Length: 288
Image (cartoon, rainbow, N blue to C red):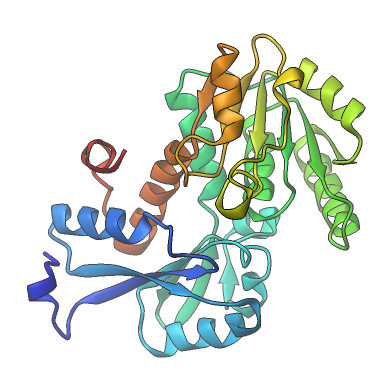
């Protein structure tokens, strides 16, 4: 059991790397879970800038960490520095969970499975239906890939037309070809297309950082474009209720805050590191 006064040379360390990480609930959440389960582990967060990523990956391995989570902006870049990728992480082109086992770093992605579990827990049926996702980066890639694998029939993905856009379009086509899901990447500047896509969808997902930090008062979708019967999900969990979700709630729409996805992806990740199931009821009651 990992109390602060019982940390020893045997205590195993798990970490979060990314920038920013100061807002993260993961250290408190995972350490509480480890304590509840009687595991001699502790979880810490480290601010790692893009130019430090390769050194951080090598350092965590050299120091004998049990594993780590990867958050923005590193999810689509960290894979090149790892020894192996799980099939899901390779297909998604993004890693959010790394286990260090037998001297090897193995990248996984629990974001997509965590998101889909959260959808299920909220009694929302999206299988065989259309969804709209804004954000083609790490979290967005995991979500639309897992959704396609699980049987969502059509997914429109919107992203700013940056240097990443063409590579993302190619990746999305590969996923579409492998899964049979109808998928397309569209310039986020095309607001008429976004409005029409949302009107045809059962679920809208924000998979960008809009809604947190200096973008806390902004939203990727205007309230006027939220169609009746739409469910609205956010991957941002700090603040717990974003402007996007507030606007949706005011219109009487079903909302899925980012904390739900955080809980379920964390549960899957913890099992990868420790082989034990996170006490999700306890964690939800304590932190949510």
